[in-house]
Image: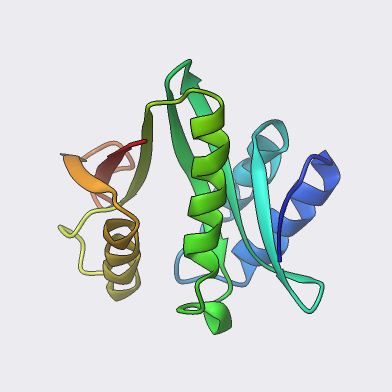
Length: 152
């Protein structure tokens, strides 16, 4: 089951719990704390299995026609079950209904050998996102960022 979450405290708890369970992707304490605070003001969806949250996605609305997946996480035991696609799809429905034209996401680029992020990039490609630009220093030289976009 997927649900749009409006309660700030619920967004914060879900974000904190899931990101801490994904240390291979979210191992920087300051980032977890920042995401937990930031998502409270953003459109936010969570997917549940047996009434427990197993994934979430938060959207930052940049301009009147463009938005970004600012953070997304699905518990490792729930990868490849369609939960990520469901989260992206629900967020896209919301954006389309609110007249957004472009959707973007940033992830670790393939200049970095992280195997988990190779799967992350494959996931976003399967959702229709296309690579647009690599930023070698946006997140620091050891974490090159890949900007991916999608026309809604």
